Image (cartoon, rainbow, N blue to C red):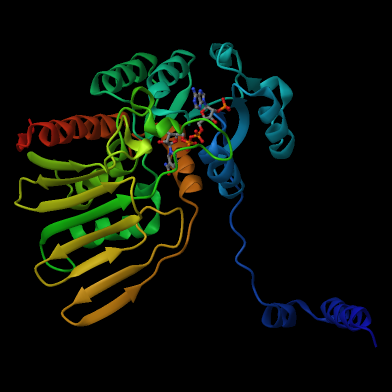
Length: 380
Ligand code: NDP
C-alpha cells in the first residue's frame, strides 16, 4: 500500500468513526481545540518609508497582528511600492509619495501612520500625518532634537490624535518580565543596571553605493547613541522606573575609520537615579552588544540578546547558581502595532507616548554635553 493510500484509509476510518459515534462519545474521544475568539476591529495602517525595517520586519508582522491591518504605503520609489503592494494586497490607489502624502487626509481607510524614515524626517512626517487627522507611531529616536519632539507632541495635542514612539522592547515578554521582576524586587532592591547595545555598522547601505544615512550627522542626529544607545538609555529608565538626575559620558571613535568622519562610534554613559541606583550603559557602532542586567541586593537577572528581534533568553544569577527562564516568543512589531491600535480603539494613552521619546532626547543631549566637556551633567 502506498503512503497516499495509507493516509486515505486512516482518514476514511476517522471520518467513519466520527459519523457513527454518538455525541457524548464524540466529546470524550475528540481532542478539544482551543479556538481563539473572533477578531474585533482592525485599524488601517499606512507605512511611510519602505526600507530595511519596513520590508523585513514590519510588513511580515501584519500577519501576526490582531488589531492592525496594512492598507497603504508612502514611498519615494513607486516601483518598489507597487511590487510590495502586489505581495501584501495594498490597493494601487493607496500608494502615496512624499509630495502627495498630505492627501491621506481624504482616505478613511488609514487610521494610523507608521513613520519608518531616517531620523531627520521623523518630525516633519509625523506632524504632517497628525495634521492629516491620523494617529502616528514614529520610529526611535523620536527626532534629532528635543525641540522637534516638543513640536511633534504639540501637533498631536492640537489634532487630538495619539502619538507613540517605536520602543518595541517595551512590548515584548522578556523586557516586560524584567520590569515586573525589578518592581517586585525578586532579587531585592535594585542597586545597578547594566545596559549594553551595539553592532558593527557598514559604511555602505545594503547592496547599494550610497553612504549609510546613520553615519551622516544631519540625517541621524548623532552616532551610535541616537540609533542603538537609545535602547540602553530607555531600558535604564524603564527598569528603574525612575528618571536620572545626573549623567556622565565618554566617547571613543577609532581614528581614521572612514565610517566615523561625522558621528561617534562608541559611547559609555553612567546615570544616577534618585533612589541611588546607578546605571552603566554602553552604545557602539564598533561591535555587537545586547544585554540588560538588573543587579539587586540578593542577585541579578539579565536578558541576552536584549534588543534583538528574537532569541531572547533570561538568566537569574544567585551566587554560583544560574537559573534559566524563558517566555513565549512573540513578534515585537505585531505586539507594538496592536498596542498602538488598542490605545486608539480604547482612547487610552499609548504605552510609549511622545513624552517618552522627548525624555530620552533631552538625556541624550546631556550625554553628548558630558562627553564634550568631560564633566558630569545634572538633569532637571
Ligand atoms: P532604511 O535606510 O533601510 O530605510 C529608510 C527608508 O526611508 C528608505 O528605504 C526610503 O524609503 C525612505 N527615505 C526617504 N528619504 C530618504 C533619504 N533621503 N535617505 C534614505 N532613505 C530615505 O532605514 P531603516 O529602515 O533601517 O530605519 C528607518 C527608521 O527605523 C530609523 O529611524 C531607525 O532608527 C528605525 N529603526 C528601528 C528599529 C527598531 O527595531 N525599532 C530597527 C531599525 C531601524 P522609500 O524608498 O520607500 O522612500
